[in-house]
Length: 490
Image 1: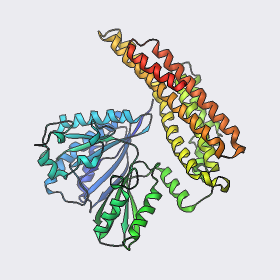
Image 2: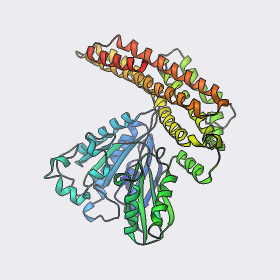
Image 3: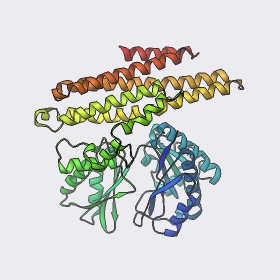
Image 4: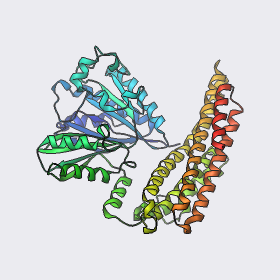
């Protein structure tokens, strides 16, 4: 199964091109592709965007840290952006064939290896964090390199996850984690007064009462006040909404946005959302975009093949005489289709005058169905992978004294995946049911299809749960799962 992981390392060098070139060269590992590189002299920071399979991307990141430690001395580093390390932060983002849990495993493997090879201590953040307070990058980076260098020696709470309670003498520490796709978005104001940018950032960021999934700070960049932000979930808090709030808050101080910039790459869907927001296109849907429609009917190929081309490869994989993908993956796919059909119905009604009073409910349904759709799509591969792990455990058990333990652990994993699918499918069914009185009656048949698909997904997933429970020896685990199954069926 192919895997694709994105890695966006941030290095504390944005002025010396030769140093950045050397770091990029060090990360040239077979199977890894450079998508983008950006240098910012004011922040004195560069952002590199890479994609690759899980093994290759991990090695590329490790080599990048090593080269940065060799070439960057934080004792002589100055810039607007906070930092604790030469290789300051390294996030791993799931793209294809991997889950956020897979990226957590990659982050922890890389962190351990970075300490072993280069004696650069590592902190884990976001989904990879081992304690809640370290999920937030700002908590780890408090005091920056100089402050952390002093604090780590006397405060046990600031001890790194990998390494001793001391920073590397020149490279500091590295923060490594796993997260969803993030948008680094900056807005320049038509003033040099950085205090205004700081006030606007305080109003917009979530930690001080602003927008959920927004982190922000104010800086002076290129002689202008800049509101620098990270959007950690653009689907829940769209970039257009962020811009509008910045604009509104700036107006309180008599200034306006002059321009904005995106650091690194941005998902296409985020720009589609912005187009819908600012153009106010009635009943906008991403399928209205020519390239998206072409991709849908050709399966990403240049030739015309109809809608069939997009689903045929998966259907043929199901039909193949192999154990995976099987019924579990098919159940997850059915649930994802149920969420997709429900989202389509809600989107077709949202924006119409007849359903204006349900605008907020429809928007909430679309957002939730979108997340459920992504979770269920992840379940397609996760189910197949969990079955492969069970087979591997049975094989290993033949020669291992801990064979029963290995098999039980693998079976538990293979049980929890379809249990999650069933829970997601049940929630999809609930959202679909809630759409019936607030959407067009002309689309009632579509909701019937969505409900049937969700029900099939739940029943299929629960049947996989049951067949695995029959072989698990851990009675408490079995009892706990059966209780959850009863709750889903109730």
